[in-house]
Image 1 (cartoon, rainbow, N blue to C red):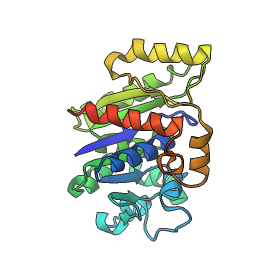
Image 2 (image 1 turned 90 degrees about the horizontal axis):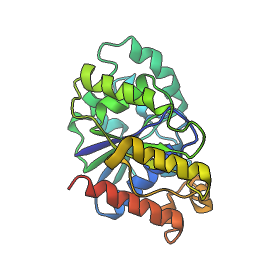
Image 3 (image 1 turned 60 degrees about the vertical axis):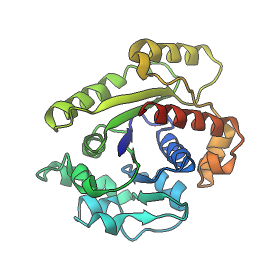
Length: 250
């Protein structure tokens, strides 16, 4: 089982969009996926469940000690399950901080999960929820939007990943890939793309996700772009990214 965390403490980098669409692409390839929404904004939950109000959420799993099976929702999409989020999760940081084992609680809870892939959508921060995401993951994928100083903040995330390896007994945790989102034909985008290749070498994905109306529309309508506009450039880019992700495990 691969547990992939999508993480970047900077907001507006299409992190959740990428998590949702990679999950959709893996499902299309026949894999079973558990999507874990750890972002209190709950956008991945909205895209996956629409207006459905879940009885239990990630907050119940981490703070109220609900059993894993109680919080997992089997969606209408075959092979896709989700642990949804809610605004309540924003209050979990303080509770987890004072709780023994609070940094690795999600990893403990997920130990019996039986899926081909677990996709973890981290919040845009470096707090306890992101620590739980990273400690539960086997690898981290980092989406980067092409803007000034896009790569500067990644050093903090890298430091946190290193701490998780050393202090939270996750020596195999690796940066599985870095990729450009909201890509366009500008000098800034070309510079950021080259910067990623220079900094991360083989960890840099070849695929870039374009700045696409179809991707934005799909997100607004609560769908993955793979189902909303399967022939669009955005959908094809995410399919290519999924192919790269799968290939890196072979």
